[in-house]
Image 1 (cartoon, helix red, strand yellow):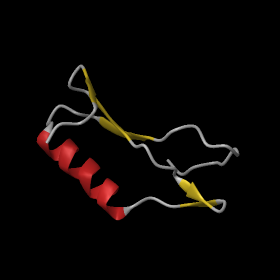
Image 2 (cartoon, one colour; image 1 turned 90 degrees about the horizontal axis):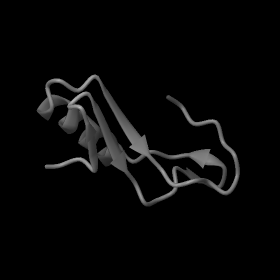
Image 3 (cartoon, helix red, strand yellow; image 1 turned 135 degrees about the vertical axis):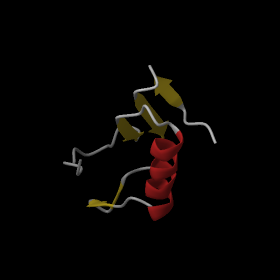
Length: 64
């Protein structure tokens, strides 16, 4: 298990190559959230973990 980016063992970034929105609605897959949880438990020094999605064609406020 290896995230896409680990910065100073403090920040984990996992890139996704799919859209976070579908027909104007935010949709996160539960498997992506579980994967983030696995990363932060495996990397004990990590304080933050970010899901990074590609640019959306329409602007949408996504939850934090």
